[in-house]
Amino acid sequence: MSYTTHNTVRWQGEDARRFRADFNRGSKLGRAADGQLIVIYDTELYPFDRHIRRLLVNKGLVPESHLAQIPSLEKLHDILPPALTALDDGELNEVSRQFYDTDTEFVSAYEAFLRDFAGPQIVKGDFVFQSTPTIRFHFPHQTGFNWRPRFHTDIMLGHPPQELNLWLPVCGASGHASMLIADLTASIGELDKLGLDFSRLAGEVQTDEVLAARCHAISHSVDLPYGQVLAFDPRCLHATQYNDTDHTRISFDFRVLPLDDYEAMSLEYRGTGRRQMLFRRGHYFDQRTSREL
Ligand SMILES: O=C(O)CCC(=O)C(=O)O
Ligand SMILES: [Fe+2]
Image 1 (spheres, helix red, strand yellow):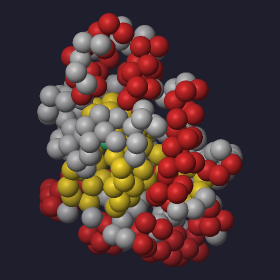
Image 2 (cartoon, rainbow, N blue to C red):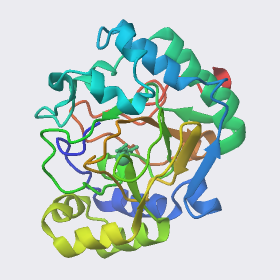
Image 3 (tube, rainbow, N blue to C red):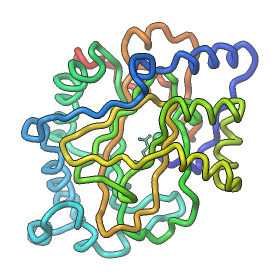
């Protein structure tokens, strides 16, 4: 998902009051801790890097023999032609675009991870989940990246505040070859200062240097090795960075929503993108819950 081409959400009247209540309550993770949790998982059970390698080859993006020559996926850019790594008008590179679709092996690893790991270890209960995770490739010095970090919350694109964001790197991610994330309390403080006006956030974070500097000041880069996953409350501001390192960053992210929070939702949450996706089972969320997988 891109954070530029979408409109921001604006709640009106009674809905605005209910939204405010949902926002104040936030996610299970926001209520239990300070909104961010890093968990280690077993990469032998969920070998996501191997899945990404297979998909790169099967999609015809790299020959297997070239892939065998790089020490890790962090050097993927060394074996890709520049045409595949440059950003287009939608702020997307061709490799990320090709990963909108995966294959049945990746999907079963994702679903096993949700059912057997995220359920017991992170959510600690049943939940609904994003049917298809978003896979991102951030190559070093990408041409076409010419904006300030877009600090955002997915809530501004219509997502429910009860969600948990999960962010999982497929190779080491640190410094500028990672995402920035702000602390929960400080994020809520900034959002409150803007009166929860998300269009102001989206606009001013590009034009207001003081706001941009404040967002940076409350943030840190998500430094995670492969084998760890970050779960965070969606109210935590976060942003992709310009990758000026010599490491490719590959990660995927997805959103889950505890079933009890889902069943208590009284607002109709809908994405602000072209498809206006409903945040309901059988729409943005899979029809099945994690325990039904
Ligand atoms: O990985 C990134 O750089 C951005 C991810 C993001 O915005 C998200 O997970 O919601
Ligand atoms: Fe996001």
